[in-house]
Length: 242
Image 1 (cartoon, rainbow, N blue to C red):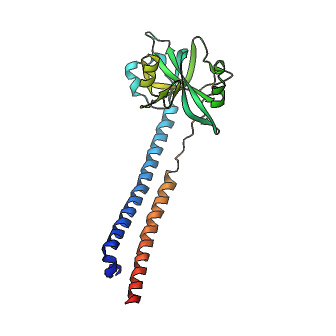
Image 2 (image 1 turned 180 degrees about the horizontal axis):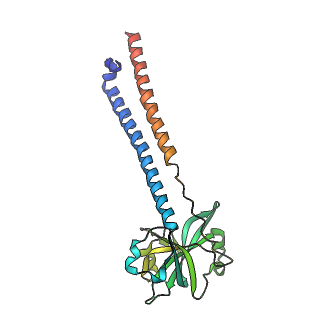
Image 3 (image 1 turned 45 degrees about the vertical axis):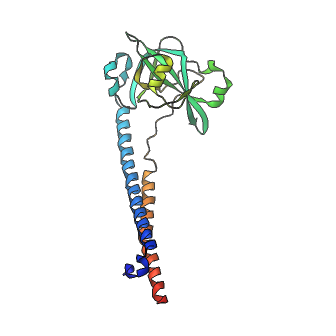
């Protein structure tokens, strides 16, 4: 047997055995972790597909008490007015490899009392933003009906000047001094001839989780086959020396 060799029972080799065993356990766990991520991705995609075919929610009729019960990508419509003075830019966005931002404005719903929501109006190239011609992406004036999706916000956002790294409702509420609804609205229509441009159609993919899982299991197989071969070679060398 391989471990009949006294050399393989020396402390240095015992440490090597423990290290390889720990490495194999890790690669197996990483493989199964990727498979779990894949199942979560499939489940999330199925939920989004189910949500997108629902009848649109009319935000003007929405009970604020029920606002926290909604999920991502539920179709919605809203009637109200944009506030061009309450505007921030969601950074680190891109379109076809072109860096840019997404324009976020507050929107006053035509409700009594008035309710407010943050609206992601769409993509704006960084070059256009830097040109400073804000009239080209100014929101429409007057009462307007918008279409899009309800989206859940993030937390721990960071606002620097007019640029924000994620849509954090608590942060925007404090910045704009408004009590915003606890989700935001992702507009899905082109309402001006200029900027910003509407959001791209949603693409649901399973990502690379399966291929990553296969890679981890291949690493495990290499270890299971390769390490015993190394040990056999060491035992064979010992016998030749003896």
